Structure formats: C-alpha cells, structure tokens
Amino acid sequence: MIDRIGRKTVELIEVVGRWGQFVADMGRAIPDVGTWGGLALVQMRRVGVDSLPVALFIAAFTGVVLALQASYTVTGMVPLYFVGTLVGKTMMVELAPVLVGLALAGRVGASMAAELGTMKVTEQVDALETLAYDPQSFLVVPRVLAGTTMFPVIVALAMAVGIVTGWLTSLWLLNMSTTQFVKGLKLFYVFKDTWFGLFKSATFGFTIALVGCVVGLSTRGGAEGVGRSTTRAVVYSAVAILVLDALWAAVLLR
Amino acid sequence: MIQFENLHKAFGDEQVLAGLTLEVHDGETFVIIGYSGTGKTVALKHVVGLLQPDAGDVLVDGRAVSSLDRERLNALRREIGYVFQFAALFDSMTVADNVALGLRRRDLGAEEISDRVAEALALVDLTGSGDRYPAELSGGMRKRVGIARAIAVRPRYILYDEPTTGLDPVTSAVIDRLMVRTREHLGVTAVVVTHDMRSAYTVGDRIAMLYEGRVRQVGTVAEIQASDDPVVRQFIEGRPT
Image 1 (tube, one colour):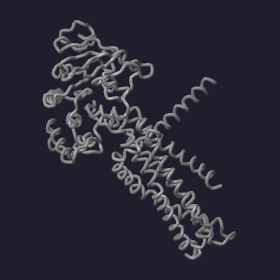
Image 2 (cartoon, rainbow over the protein chains, first blue to last red; image 1 turned 90 degrees about the horizontal axis):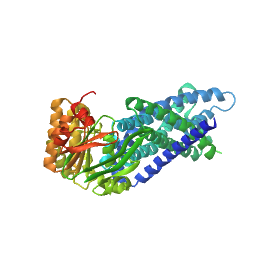
Image 3 (spheres, rainbow over the protein chains, first blue to last red; image 1 turned 120 degrees about the vertical axis):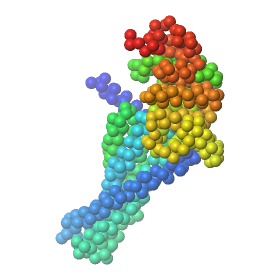
C-alpha cells in the first residue's frame, strides 16, 4: 500500500515536472518571432474563424433557453425586466465562456492533439529538429498564442449573440418590450462582468491549446496512440476548464 | 569525421546500444547493417542529437553532440541532412515547401531558395512535382523528396535511415543510384543504415555490422563479403539459421 502511494506520488511529481519543463521550453521559444510569427496567423484563423459557427450556434440557443428559463423563474416574483438582467449576467460571466470553452475543447484541443500526435509518430517532429527548427517555436507557440488571443474574441461574439437571441426571445415569446429588456440588462451591469468572462476565456484558450500540444507531442504508438491522445486532450481540457472556472470564481468574484 | 565513442543507450530494461565504437571518415559512404532492433536507427539519431546517450558520445568533427547547447546543436544540424525511413514529409506542405523548409532557416533570398529547390528536385528526377502534396506521391517518390530535402541544404554529411525499406527492387535500385549520384555531385560523407545487402554493396565504401549493441565486424565491401564470422555470414547470406 505504502509502496503504491509512493510510486503514484513519484509519477505525479514526474508529470508536474514534465509539464513545467514544457511551459519553460515554450517560454524560451517566444523570442523566436521569425519562426512563429507567420504560423501564428494561420493558427489564429483556424482557431478563431473556423470555430465561430460552432460557438455562435451554441450561444444563440443558450440565449433563447436562458430568456425562457429566466421568465419561468421570475414570473410573479420580480418584474419581468429581470429577464434581461439574468440573460446578460449569465451569458457574460458564465455560460458563454464555459459552454464555448467546452465545445472548443472538443474541436480545437482534439484537432491539435491529433495533428501533433500524427506528426510525432510519423517522425515529422524529428524532421523539424534535424532542419534546425525548434518544435516549440514552430508548433507550440503559434497554437498556444492563437488559443489565448482568439478565445476571448470568439467568446465576446458569443456573448453578443446570446444576448441578442435572448432579447429576440423576450420580444417574440415573452411579450416584453425592448425598453424592458435593456433596462434589465443595464440594471446590475458592471464592466467586470465583461472582462471577467473574457479573461476567463483567455485562460481556457491557453489551457486547451497547451493541453493539445503537450498531449499531442507525447504521443506514442501509431494510429492507436493518436486516438488515445485525442481523447485524452478532450478529457484533460474539459476537466481543466471546469477547475479553472471554479478557481477564477473563487479568486475574482468574492 | 563522425566518431561513435563507446555509445550506450537503453530504453527501459532493453539495452539497445552497449558500447558502440565506430569512425566514419570524410568523403566515404559508410553503411551500418544489422538485424532489426539492433540499434542502427538509434545510433543515427544520436548523430543529430535526437536522442541523448546514457554513456559515451558521438563526435562530429570533434564536437561532442550530447554536450552542445541548442544554438550549437542547430549549427551542427545545418551541416547534416537526414533522410528518414518513411520520409517524414510534412503532409500539409507541397513538395517544394518541404524541400524549401530547411533553406528558410538560412539567410537566403526567395530566388536562391527557389533555385535550390529546383536543383534538388532535378537531382532526384522530380522536376515538375513541386506543387504536389506528399499524399499524392508513391513510396519511392516520397523517399526521393526526402533525399531532395536533405541535399537542398548542401550538407557536409547525409544520414540515410533505411532508404530502400519497403520499396520494390527497381525503385530500390533507383534510390541506390541517387545516393551514389548525390555523393558524386556534392562530395558528402554519408552514413547509410540498412539491412538491404544489395543496397549496402552498391553504395558502401565500408560496412559495419551491428550485433547486440556493438560492432561485430567492420571492413570494406570486399572484406565483409569474404567474412568468416558466422554471425556476419548468416546475415549477409540471409540464412534463417
């Protein structure tokens, strides 16, 4: 028993050490702008533009459901314009960042892990090194940078779309006026609602991309290994998003 | 000159290299033969620092590879072309971009890069294939692109990892001819890892056989062909027992 606990502890320390080393190596590669500059733009398009349809689809329907649920919850207890308050606050602070984050953990994280995993098992990563490229500069920095910068952009648009569909639902299905919805939207709004959601989504983007890269580049064992890495990247990213979500709430919302 | 000095490498409990000592002289094509899993590729990867030795080292022109910092290691890698067993081409890039990638790490203008890519593709008889993607190529063509990528940077050394594995006899002969032509045109020192004896006899100046992590015998092609070592004889004759 003690032996097992000891082994597990050593394994955990090794994992933490590997991830720490990976992040340190990534930091070392940041000054190599000549290598990652152009590649970062390509990744930004892949992470940002290509993810927009999924993110906006989720946000649109979340806005509809939020308005209906808010109406169901507050009717008869508080004025109906609180629907605007609930839609706005919930979209910005929680649902847009977390739902989009979880959806993109599947799309972006899995795609990065699969791509880098395939490169690893087919020796393309070794080939890069023999051509005097640092895989951190060529593969990791552009992806992590794209994740960190594009997630807030996607989430900002998702927030806007969710609020708009919540507003349209209020108009068409709840017989509210625009004035009522906007009054509720502004009622308890503070700028922190927006920046908190965007900051949180930047950390989600960083984490999803980092996990995709670390897991992808540690792939072993051919096609089966690539499959394992892809699943692992999605699971680790989803868990990390939920843990980070709780962490930021505890640190920044108290 | 490339020197393997008492090189040891294990993966877990499996000791792959157990004191490999060899010298590859400037200008020669040196062939390393041996059974699958005897550490031929592992030895080759130590030359470019893709693996770190457990003990011993590889010296390239006197530079101990395992102790080079990243900058010096990259400088060394710029002098070496590496042809991977399955070519290791970048799937998302065209053939021309694959060949140009190593050149973009050097201070070369776009025109010079384009000229060098065309020259390298011509040397491997792939003129006009620059716009194709690796997925559109046959196994032999992929290997030739791998060779073009290695020679485009005009290296001092070329390392070939199983260049004819998986190819039909005619395509293998084409690759052998290419390796000979590359040496004649560029005057490079080459290390070829293979278990294809016909290829070894065609391209090699000297041959070493690896067995149980060490060199079993090293000599010229004629010396290896005349070897009376039973392990070497069994391997070169391809006898099951």
